[in-house]
Image (cartoon, rainbow, N blue to C red; front, top):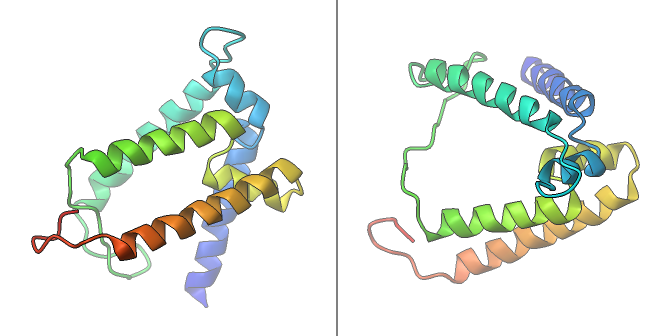
Length: 146
């Protein structure tokens, strides 16, 4: 039960942070991405803050084998920039630019009843489903690479 309460508290804090930073407002996000029009640089501060927190969090995490609540800590090992990573980044960026949402803010906005977020979440889930179908059909490299 303690884990569920902690998960809820962290999720709530994350959601409140997304709301306060403006990440749940698609207009603010597309304004940030509009480099040659009415550019809104305010989200650069949000991203900079997130990167700073991430740098310190990963530095601490690399020295640990368990989470703060005692669970196993599994960090990614790969540092390769491959085709899957580049294509995934392009698809993510295109979705972010077209809709003004990424997954976390979309879920918060869905909870707030934004219809555009509902459309995005349905499309996101469909994309995840298609990815899983393609992953199951892809031939596996014996060395574990794709």
